[in-house]
Image (cartoon, rainbow, N blue to C red; front, side, top):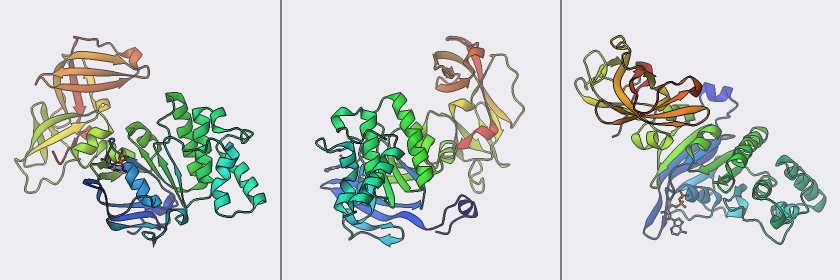
Length: 373
Ligand code: ADP
């Protein structure tokens, strides 16, 4: 695939970091990966997102060479590596449970991959030192894993993967064993390390916030298949299907009908909505619009109706309200009996409480067609 001009401007070379072509991996009766194709650009931070059991770890293992392919191919740097054993693929992997050797010190753990690659001692020492410094563990190389906190052990695992200067870094839920604050801290460090090294990175998570915060691009997996690929904002606001839409966050839906002039008639008003597939041949056809909770504006119940075409508006009653500090989440029972979710920033200025009557307004530009169910 040719690199786009914008991609080139961001420093992408157009050379693929990792390419998967139609790969199938089975464990007995279970099809863990079902004809998966992906192009990860060189230097990209690429997130694999999906529920437990959808095949994320298997995908990483296929890249590392630990999962046998039934069909398809894996290329790294433009070279097919199907027949290259794991230790010759030049990938560095970090596991969720760290997988450190408990009897070795942090420095010895980090040095392990260098030793097995025959790197001379003097160079080994300086590279281990550099790697430990990169992950913020300078001076702690003499400690054994049992003398380090969970976060520090995770850093050792990261240093061990980085020290071999891999062409591809594979991170399997690297933060899931850490508490919320450490997770944020390590997330920033991983982002920083990625920026400074430029290593092509595949990162597995089931946490959509982590994925959106870190990713250049995300692939959403469902039952062994890639169902959506794109940049975080693109996937969040314009997902190609309902599974990806709901996995990335809460949403509200409204049924509509496409009229001849490209407007969508809904029970709550008619909108001219740009993010709807071509109207040709579909006039009169039913479709579904969706919007994210932060696009719903809560207004007093007697708010005047919006101008025709510009927004939809529906009355409702606040069923629940959850103050979250920096924002507030409202569940609103709307006129049809369905529940809409609305989030609003600046909670100190919020006047609506449970059982209050409200009007929910969504502007046309904040709605998109939700295809595929
Ligand atoms: P995820 O990382 O998304 O949680 P996995 O890649 O671990 O998913 O697993 C994908 C599917 O393959 C699941 O149904 C899982 O139970 C199955 N699976 C994974 N590893 C094995 C294995 N070693 N033996 C049998 N089934 C496996």
